[in-house]
Length: 324
Image (cartoon, rainbow, N blue to C red; front, side, top):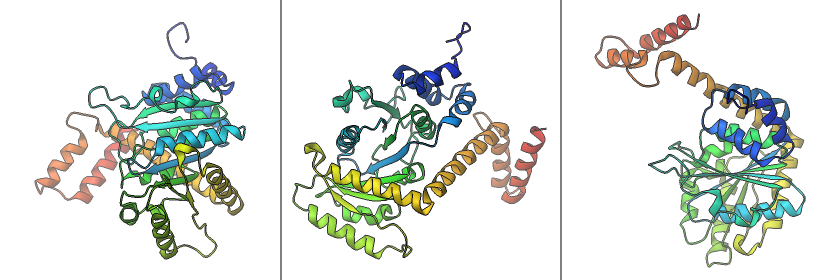
């Protein structure tokens, strides 16, 4: 920290790049807290990002996401890769913090300096992620992680947001949970790059795999597109993880050879820029509590005093004049 109590952002970034876990944790905390230094942090990180492979792990509650994440980290570490894990947890309604902390998950990796694990509170954000997850991924990327694993909350059908964040999305299913039907409902055929039937030692695992194969065959995919593989695992026993890593690496190679990796990351950056711009516009409208310009225009539309298009034009005009 500087003498005035401000974080030394360039110093934090350099220490994080050198592998100092406390510096990485401090940068992620600045991101989560929406610190006034957030702009400075992202600007300092930008030249050092774009190297990590980002894996998203999603699926309904109870399929074994945390166990699979832990087993996958172990497999990646055996291959000599540095790994960062962002485990997005449900939020406490009282503190807003994560209900499941990193102190009670993935304890096998607690003493490994090549693994950084951080629990993040979703804080009511839909889509299975915390709003700050993309920025936290950037921190771990810049800190030299070869692979960043993002494990989502597990809220079911709204978890598709992880596909926009990850290079490769792993969708977990398990027998005995009606996952074949849920797969069709949740639209996960549009999300998954690799499907994992976990708890494959249970009855019904082969049926889940057959159901998935049938639905993948029916999906509308380009002839030269990626056909998602299905891997059976028993994560608790470490079974099938080597095959899973092979399929993840095969997808990474496909992304690179087809140029899809660049396209995905450009879409990710576009969504992030758009979100920041919209947040800035809302702040300019005063839409952060109280009776904002947007509220006044909405009241006028509801009262029949104006129409929505005219109200939108006035809102845009007011934001442009306010920015001069």
